Length: 189
Image (cartoon, rainbow, N blue to C red; front, side, top):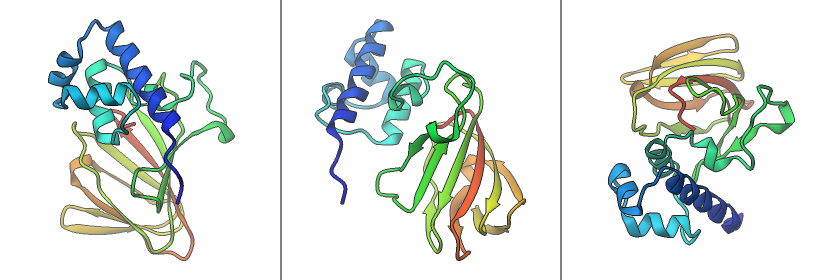
């Protein structure tokens, strides 16, 4: 099992504090805007605790920046993202699915993510704080997308569009990894 990277927690916390101060917000005001406690935010800023993606998303919305602002080593100012330089995301507790963000943080209205789901694995949907419009395009493998009461089987070249609240799960039913592109607005990472 990988050890937690506490340096990342400190970097994220430092960026949160810097952005909060730029906006002239107190910890109490940020807590009010996010629904998180002042003590939790203080611990995050000092790198003492890690934050979930959902909490980080709430913080980023309150501070008016993309969640990528906190996760990227350096903010991307270039419009090109090279294949070997994509931001890799593995969500906590979900080692069977991996995301690569293929848009820069200059694209703040739309986000394109490359998803990789291992054979036989299922990813259950996440609760998003804001409604999204999403489209999934399958590049390889076979992906079952569960929307509300129905499952749809997608093969390479197939796509499906929906509002984010409808998504229940993804499941890879092929012997190979399912690779798919997700286009989402507004951005979720």
